[in-house]
Image (cartoon, rainbow, N blue to C red; front, side, top):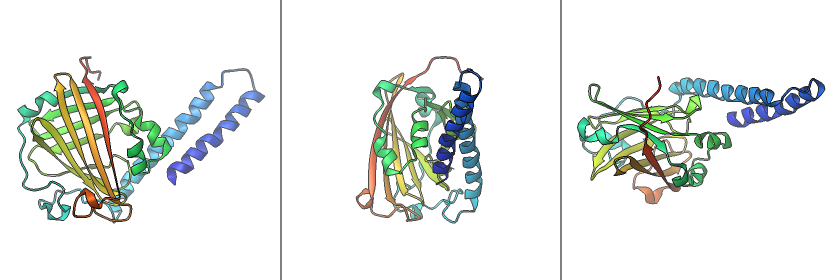
Length: 256
């Protein structure tokens, strides 16, 4: 509802911008339209920031503290935590840029989570990821690269094998839990989250060469209303989607 309102406000501002231009001089109207778009984006960013703060008090928010007991996660790959050795994660470290011509369609994902058109457009501007291994803090960090400030998210995972809490990728209220695994040459992120659209996902990152990485994401949504994913696996899900993308390691020097 919030995004619908902001979208209507943005598009309703365009006729006023055009009429103002027609009544005035012959100056280029593109700055006027760009300013309206920038204001709309700024409003979205501001609202998302406020929503993230308010979500701390939501009764549906996923507990951000590691529970230490995975029984309540209902079979989502918790089990006994397995620590990861930082040296074995080093091949994944670096800046990975999306290969657009190899990009799969995200329509099934967007439909599964009923993503707003504005965020669908924004997701197309994700340029890639930067993966950082911090041995001192025993953390694995994923930085989302995007020219859009509100999409520059960072997910932090623990190398001791325990779950970690991060912001939801669909920017809805509450949070998501996840843990990282390294099995058979594949780096896996196991994620789960609660209401709304309670579900889980597995990200599989495989290095097909020294500078090429393939990401396969499989997600299941169980219900818009359930507070946690149902037990019993994907056969009880109300919907599922798979997405594949290819990334190349960037050798360009990082700025800043």
